[in-house]
Each structure stands twice: as structure tokens, then as C-alpha cells.
Image (tube, rainbow, N blue to C red; front, side, top):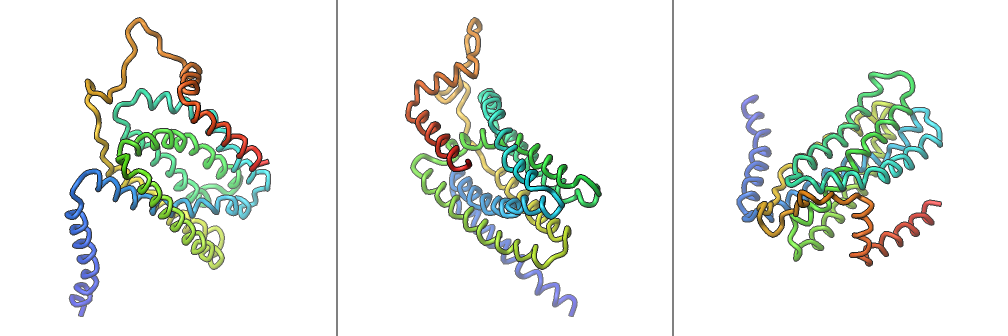
Length: 272
């Protein structure tokens, strides 16, 4: 009977393995494999995003004040303001940035491991330390975001870009919408703080799988002498400062400058 039970339990695993092998064989090109990884990755990223949507409620359950929850929303935005341009300058000097992208994303999501374990370690100042961790992981998150968008343009062909990004948005929204409701039910039925720890554990697992599938993406690099290579400054030429680069970008892309200004005015009114 035990052998028969083992065989019955192993059948679904064998079928899943056969399905994955069949899917892998049906994907012919590296571009198609990258797109499949992008679709799968965004679903698992949505698991962590759904768990993160309860951060404010978790701070309040820990005894944090409304002002602390306000800082949880405002401080990451302030950190992003100061780190986006330095991050962009660092990315401009990187030729093969895949490891940096995977590493920065893994570092950003590792903060949720610390949040999950904090109730076992600390007995006081839990709300403040939790907010501090969430603010701190904004730095690698900003670094990842700055490099992620340009990498997507290298991975997804121009003819497929709108479709792939639209499907990623659909998959992300559907995952977050469904799991946010289910996680809310889980929190209502569980006991604090174990219910939040289980929720963050599920989110960490989803985030880890998301990082794994991003690590499977392969970028086709241009040769150092090729057309896509970055031109290095001549020996006697000083590198431009970030202010000069920003002014040059504004002059060369007036449409982008208008988008930035419109977004700033819209968000200013939206958050006041």
C-alpha cells in the first residue's frame, strides 16, 4: 500500500515535469524564452506585492502611529528622489548588468525576510525597526528599477514590446487583486503576529521565484567595437556631470521633459 501511495503521489510531479519539458522544447528562440520568463516572473512578483500591500496595516497592528505609517509612504519616495540619478550614473558605466540587476533585486526583497523574523528577535521598537527596514530596501529597489527598464528594451523586440508589457500589466494586476483578497482572509482567520509572518513567508517565496526567473533572462550584448557599444570619453575630455547630462537630455528630448513636468504637477495635486 505504501508503494502504491508513493506511485500515486509521484504521478502529478512526473506530469508537471513532462509538461515543463514539452514547453521548453516548444520554445525555439532565446527571445521567446525571455518573454516566457518575463510572464512567469511578474506573477511571482505579484505575490510579494500583494503581501506588501498590508505593510501599513502591519505597522498599525504592531502599535505604530498614523505618523509612522505616513513616513512609510513618504520616506521611500524621498529616498528615490536622491538615488535615481546616482543609480543612473552607475548603470551608465556597466556593460553587462545582469548580475547587478539580479543582485539588487534579491537584496531589496531580502528585507521581507528580516521583517518576517523580527517578532522572534525583538520585543520592543518593532514598528520603528520595520519601517526602517522598508525604507532601507528602497535603495536597492531604486537601483534595480533604474537598470530594469533599459534592460527590458534590450530583451523585448520593438515589435512585441507593447504586447509583452501589456500582458505583464494584466498578469500583475490579476495576481495582486486575487491574492490581496485571499491574504486578507488569511489575516482575519489567523492569530497575530503569526498570520502576518505566514503571509510574508508566502511573499518571500514568490519574490525568490521572481528573482530566479529574472536570472534566467539572457541579454544579447553588442560587441565592444560594434554599433551598440558605449563611446568612452577621450583621454583629454572630462566626463560630463550629472547636471550637464540632465540639461542635455532635456534639450534633446522636449517631449520627455513635458511628460516629467505633467507627471510632477499631477502627482503633486494627487497627493496633497
